Image 1: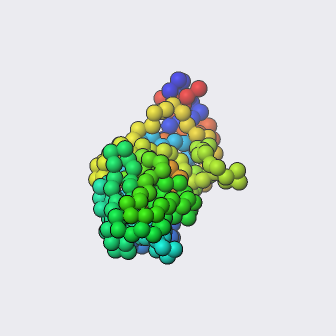
Image 2: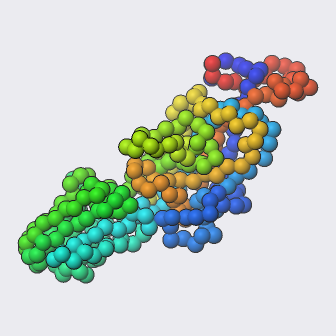
Image 3: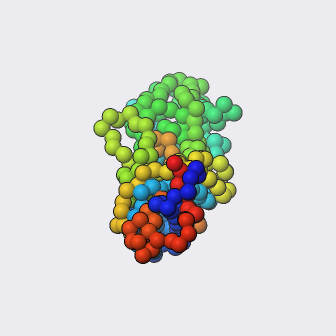
Length: 297
């Protein structure tokens, strides 16, 4: 912080999902958990101090428990076609490594074609091999709501071969354990700040994302995030009507942006705000001494 200000004050708000008494949304795609648990993954918070006249905000820090499923009900399928007959393969909701996903895929596919094997290499590629059948076959990923990202194929692609001993191998690096970062989202705050994502669709408008958090821990590890630019705040002109807001997490990359199931685990976020001092609105509140709060110049 570069200067002291009598006009603005710095305000912190600490949010724990366990503090919420109501969910922030009424639907939950991508989860197999009971709907009454959504409050722990998509909480709604109430601003207990209703008077601040807010002009800036940012996410200061967060602590998250890595418990979410990287394969969920929005990205768990692809089509396996053999001899002209399509079969929809549905991978169970869970989190996987390359080895465990390969074993699961082999079980699912060999139930249709005995002798089909699936392996995962040190170079992060899956290889599917027909050891018995000589007919033509392929793996199809019809959209981004499929397993293309986890298995290392392009979305909207058909990847085929034919013959005994024929193989289909990932065309790009596979990500069996999911993306390497999360987005923190808020339907109330996201559209009001200048936090941006790139997108291939020229008609896309700003979304609910307010922060990007790297996934630095393996499954069941705790992830701690701290903002790298503590003096920079987003403009956030909401006046005194900012009384409640929601927060939820989504997978990074171009995965379907739906609330993650946090399995009822505790996570917390610290938000920083810049607001006008009461002294700038009410002379009776003017402090006797020069204020100590700061704002960057």
